[in-house]
Image (cartoon, rainbow, N blue to C red; front, top):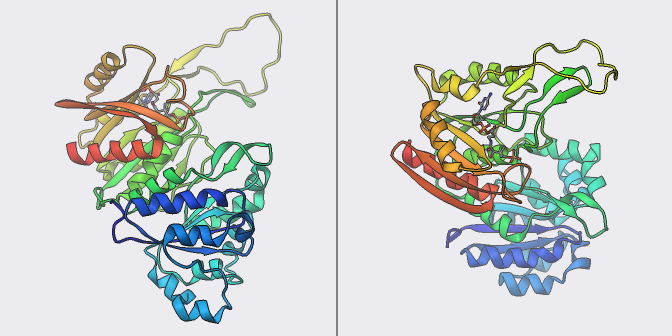
Length: 395
Ligand code: PMT
């Protein structure tokens, strides 16, 4: 009953994902939350208010100008009642109207009138999601403190494939739990690296890897939710910055090292989740390299090891490394823990399909000098919360 005594106002927009909102109400209620539902007029074309009323145990609010509904629990009271306002699905239209600060419907009015944190779970066609207008609106809302959860990527109801699927109800419910979780990292400054690095070959080519940044961004988001002041040094990834997180974008390992060293002095915790290229090109070509012989050789030189550099500092933060291994995971991870003088290492077996690089799930074997713990396969957000919980405990 992790959401006991929490009042969650659920806003439902008019998209095909609205059918999932019924399950979301159930998931929130089974965790102890009180749920009230606000629907847009178009949401009611996709799912009947009676279904949401039966599941939530409260009448569904939809009309700003309905005197009877306003007499029961008016829009201001609804907005005040909420501890958290979750809008799922949030269509491109709702997002645009919220960005503009419009109060043209009960749902958008509540978003303006509430002092509670607001969460948006986008759901729309992938082209609409990737359109510059939608991206601008999301970034603008995020910079004003709105939390953006998702979307997922995959096949869509319209037959297209790409980002724009609403997160699964269970995932949203778990994030609500995380949102109200104990602020185990309150007062802590946490620096982390995420994503891949790019090492230039010439002006148009580079060496990189398949890291998506999802694991590191999930850690950044969770750490912020747990009360930490988070600085995220991110390689080139296409992910929105989690709410409340300071983000520094870099390309190469050298740039990542520079950004980390500039920020590290005042940090309590450092987590190296980035997949940093171990080597870079010895001599980057100034002009595009032309095709000539059948084979060619590129001379590489070692990149600085960011994690080892931080761990060697005289006043180092609690330093956590990751280890991406394909075999003998525990053996190699323990070796890295000792050799780099780390406080903790989180090892993942990246040979398992559906885990590690560019996946939504992962599993970790976490090792520290006096102990270890297995964190079984789950979504990266849940896993991030578990790893941060361990860090708070061991530190
Ligand atoms: O980004 P995702 O798609 O979500 O995937 C997540 C992940 C698989 C990238 C992540 O879970 C992970 O394992 N990150 C570390 C990947 C890696 O580079 O591992 P490694 O075993 O090569 O490096 C060991 C540690 O040293 C890592 O903490 C790494 O950040 C650090 N390192 C490595 C080289 C270098 N030059 N500088 C470093 O700081």
